[in-house]
Amino acid sequence: MTYDGLIVGLGNPGTKYARTRHNFGFMLADHLLEYWDGQPGTVCAARSARLNAQLWEVSEDYGSRRWIVVKPLTFMNLSGQVVGELSRKNGIPADRILVAHDELDLTLGTVRLKFSGGLAGHNGLKSVAAHLGTRDFARIRLGIGRPEGSEAMADYVLRSFMPAEWELVARTLDVARDAVVHYCREGLTAATSRLHTR
Image (cartoon, rainbow, N blue to C red; front, side, top):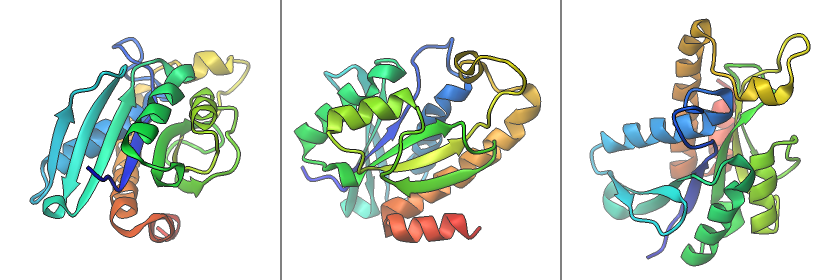
C-alpha cells in the first residue's frame, strides 16, 4: 500500500505526562484523529503495530489520499526509533514526514510550519533526525514559551499547562489541526502560506 506521508506526534506515554507541555505533539495527533473521524469520505482506523507505538491509518476523499498517524510510546528521547522504522517499512521518505512538537522558542498560542533546519535542542527531534539520517523533514511547531525565573527547563516542559492556559491551548490545537489538514491536502508551501498569514 502506498502512503502520502507520515504524521508524527511527539510526547511521553502514560497519564503522568498526558497534560504536560512536552506532550503538545500527542495532543495535536489526538485532535487530528478526532477531526478526521467525523469527516464524510474519511476513514480513520487504528492499525495494529508491532512497534512500541500507537498507529492510525487515515484515508481521505474515499481513498485518494492515505496517511499514517503515529504516537511513539518509547518516551521522547527515543521517538526516532519508531519514525525511522515506519519510514523504511512503508517507503515514506523523510520529506513526506511531518513531526508535531512543543517549541520553547515560540510563545504559547503560536503555531509555525517549517521544513528542515535546526532542532532547537529538542530531544525528540534529535532522535527523529538521527534515525532518519537527515533533518530534512517538516515540523509543526507548537509554542509553549520559556519558563519565568529560574525554573529548570526539564521541570518546565514536564509540568502541566496552568488552568488559565487551557483555553489558549485549545485554540492553538484548532489552528494547528487546520494547518495539518491543509498540509495534507495542499502541500507544505500552501499550508505554510495559509498559516503564517492568518
